[in-house]
Image (cartoon, rainbow, N blue to C red):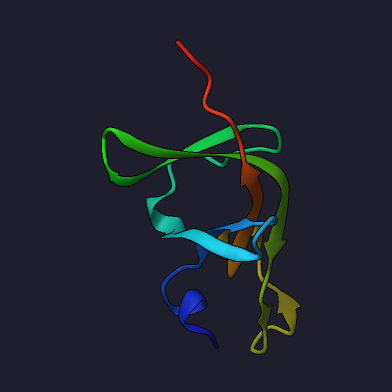
Length: 92
């Protein structure tokens, strides 16, 4: 069992242009599930410094439960990866 499964799983943002995880968050803190095509803004050093990413794909990793011999349910996801690429900030 991985640490992600013990803590209820995680969601990570993987920048496909750099093959680098740019952010990771426990699933228990997630308020909604971002979808393909949506933009995510991540604060780098405070409210005036944001990085913008567009989701290009979503991948769900479900663990296998050895006790029941079945895959875990979506509510027990081990990890969700949002594949993202940098996007331009839209002007107001």
